[in-house]
Length: 116
Image (cartoon, rainbow, N blue to C red; front, side, top):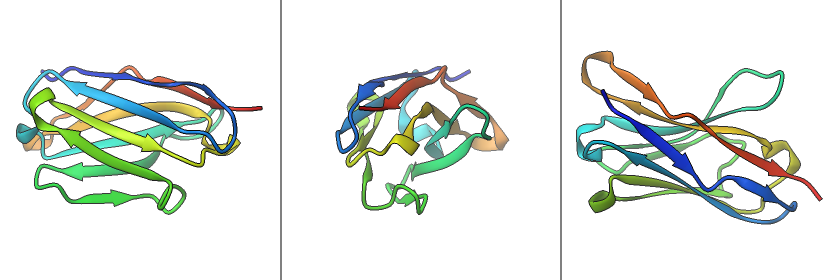
């Protein structure tokens, strides 16, 4: 069982920035892929970004150039730096961990609201 705890969400004005954190209860080296997803009201959950255990990253087109993933291995933490935020970025953001043998874990989510 892997527990994921997200934090860092909040209310920000358009054009502002936030940094989300996802702390894993196990070494992130044991996690094949750590990803971020988001779900806006009335919409399906969508992929945002992911980072592999080898450090490769992948981003959705909607956030490419604005969002950046990084990680602190010693703290078992992955960060999502979000810049140039737009109202359409408003959603609950979820951290995901893909383990070996198809095991998949989710955090509880953190709300991001972009509004003036």
